[in-house]
Length: 256
Image (cartoon, rainbow, N blue to C red; front, side, top):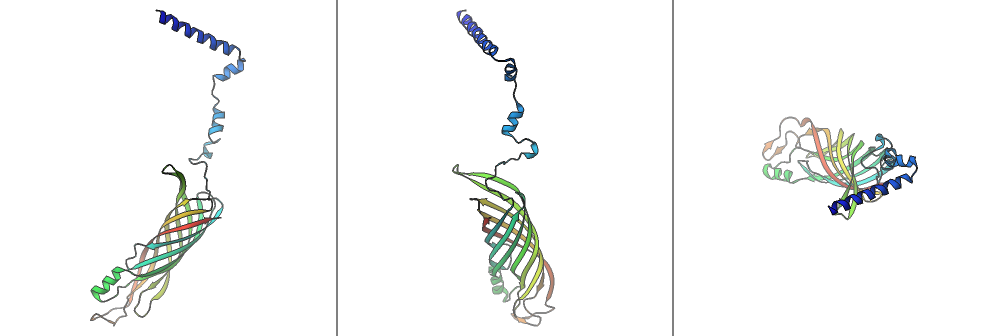
């Protein structure tokens, strides 16, 4: 009974104290104290309109209205007859954070791979094949992904991932016993790239690039040539074929 009486006394005293504090405030302030100002909260923590809000509001390294240069090197990894390296240079410009334009030149330094050597060992002849020499493309760039990533809770890295779609020209050689024949073809390009920024002006970039071109095909040996005891017959022209070249490139980008 005593505990209940003490508790009621404490509650009554608290209510009286709260009422006395409220009576000392102006009426307008009393009414306003019970309301939450949603507008001020919105202006402080959010954009004024939903259209102005994006998931990542503050980009530390921006691309909009900036030129860039990229130097890359890589390898082809789906060529059935060749191995070697590819070097590349690109000049680009971003109109905003999503869309850009890029011109690229690639130069290949390729040689016969182990499959060709095995073919020669088995059949005493070199297979009919083409060799990539160089290419250039004009591509549109779209970057739908931008993110920040924590590295073992020690640092934050900034990266984005995008697509490049382009068209251009591809130079190749038709391998022939008398000397390779140089040719060129219109080509398409589809690339997926990711770049990691480590300063305002520099980023590391990785590209996975696919190109498609229609190339002429010819026999390595001229008709009538004796190869391993067999005479090559028919015509030398083998028509044309759609060729897909895939390469993986790693490079450094300078942003101006």
